Length: 175
Image (cartoon, rainbow, N blue to C red; front, side):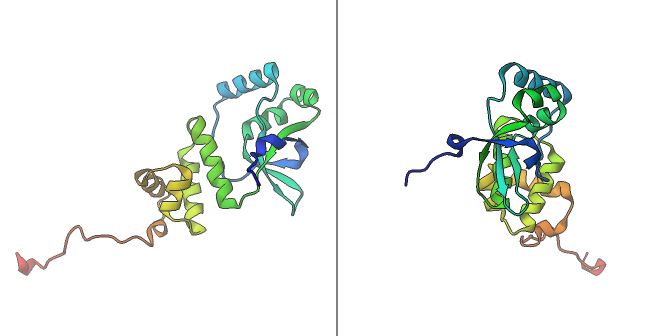
């Protein structure tokens, strides 16, 4: 069967059935949120919200598009005009793959919050993802991964790494 991208099967989902994820490191400053509001006000929703459908609670969890979602949540004029529904493109991926998708979407557009990004690296390490996996799926080089690990200050992120000896202690008699 030929692959079909999720964007070809957009569905209208009531905003009440959509929820944010707890790992998105993307932050948008107030002026950019105003610009996003103006864009949606003038042009409508031109891009779907990317979600994972969670059948356990019958909710759509945002992978990408949190700020477009917020615009509808916070602006009654947009909510009313759109009938309280958002265009959603559904992907069916595991949590680690959804995290990677979120990061790829964010990084392709611009910057993201370093502290929240560090937490994602920690979570991926916690579930057993290697630096090689993180590098491959999040588009990061090993130096960037190392810097983000250092920000969390958690030594267990390095538990599987071998370290060389930078110096060897000596007795005062050895001088």
